[in-house]
Image (cartoon, rainbow, N blue to C red; front, side):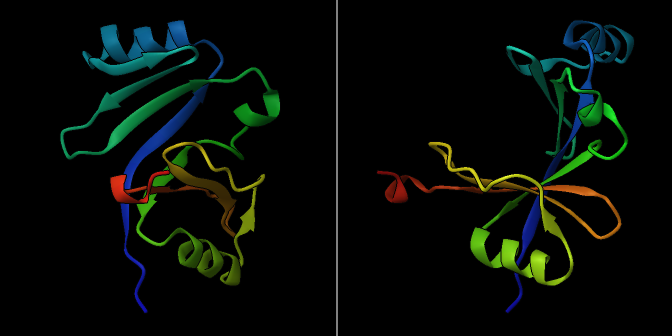
Amino acid sequence: MTVGARFWGVTLLCRSIVRTREIYESGLGLRATLVGHGFAEYDGQNGAKLVLKEVSSEAALSTGYAPLLNFNVADFDTSLYRLLELGATLDGPVKFPAFGKVALVRTPDGHMVGLTETLMEQDAP
């Protein structure tokens, strides 16, 4: 069975969301489409997003956690188990926010991959 994933964006971790937004907005001319406490999101021309997320942990800022490649998947469980079978490791627990399921895995090469399955309206409680 082929599991299709749609690449939707890259998350860059930063020390100061204010300074980093200045680089991308004033320096590169990007416009934030969503801004919250400690994060900003930008739409790319090809539909992919750039997400900036402020973190305080030096471990999170190391090259081991950034960039983070994000994928929407239709079948979260199948996708996650397949990645684990191929040698990826779960980095923290699977989370169940109101919109669906999310997980972060580290590939055998050290790349960080975020998986998201969004609930359809008919699936929502």
